[in-house]
Length: 238
Image (cartoon, rainbow, N blue to C red; front, side, top):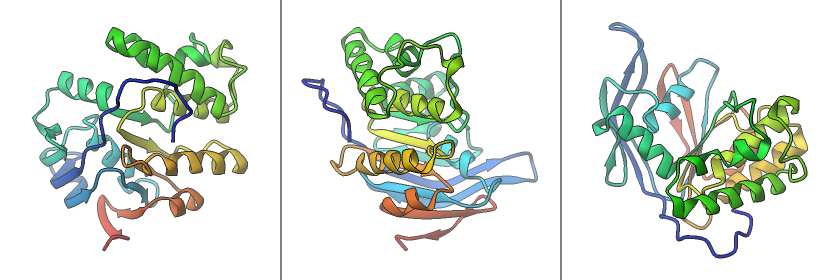
């Protein structure tokens, strides 16, 4: 769900995801990730679980072109990530993907609002106000509405996590990929964010895939995958 944004440009609906024969190698002998086939319908929310080092983050990054596979395809609707150049993958992410990084990746010299609205600097002119308005609204929703002008250096880890979430969601992306989005939050804040993230797909216009160790978040999502040694070994959809 998104904070009320008034009259906004129409957002593209989330595409289906189809992964086939995906292989990511660490070197010639060691396979980091192998996914024979995975289909995620548009609007579904998926929790990805597994031990540290199992390949969860590699999986998430392969879905959006941050990691280039040695074989296989990742298709978001008609878009085949394997066919994109590095520049093409970056353009796809800017237009379609909201990324919530485990390590935040904030710019220390910018304010909370500057970080949350960063995508406006790279967006077409017609979309910039929409993104900036969304950034402010998400900061409000996440309890940081009165801190938008403060330097990021003054924020705690949990506050930084919420700024990173606001940045990912500010432009209403149809695809949201989250890496441990609640890990730095206290229980109350984590539960509130889990409710927001679980609500993203309910309109059918957002697909959420979240790597998480948080059982409370996972329980709210439509589907659970378990990755062991780079392979999906359990899928609650069968």
